[in-house]
Image 1: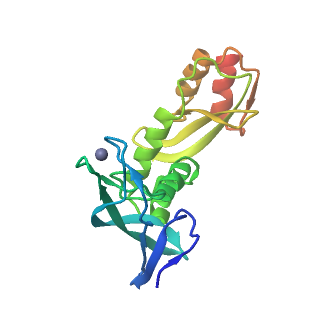
Image 2: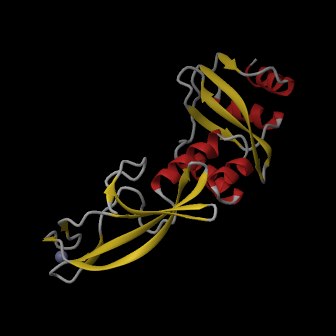
Length: 219
Ligand SMILES: [Zn+2]
């Protein structure tokens, strides 16, 4: 029974079987055989070299832990180069699907705690913390000057630096700008003194220590 079915994150894949093993759903998928360009010499080929079965962790399906069993095809070119086919759901050398990665990237930032996010996505809290660190390093560029309206919110991250972190966002666009490692008054104050000369409005809940830090730093 082969059928192409639009499953979120698995578009274009052929679902060859679905199995329920205990609490886990296994989706067996493969891609259609088609002409690929050789990454080395750019010639066309559809000659199959071999297949490998790859297990990939995916998002939950009907509240069940879900794994993709991907029969990955490798092609071989006349020049001798062997290479994997293209597929839309997993990146090279990854054991988790693209969708899963996107979901935990969002939840690493927006989820309640690392522990809870880890439980939902079936991984360890340290995986979520690593992701959180990666995002705060790469996607958030170093801040020179904060905009005139900022929002400060706390986030229960439970990292080595402390139980709570602070997210600094643009108060108008709501885009996160920076993440402070803890919510100590000293940290906020130093940060605002350094980067906050243009800030006129600070949106935040009325935590006393925040308020005092903001007032002391910005007047
Ligand atoms: Zn080639």
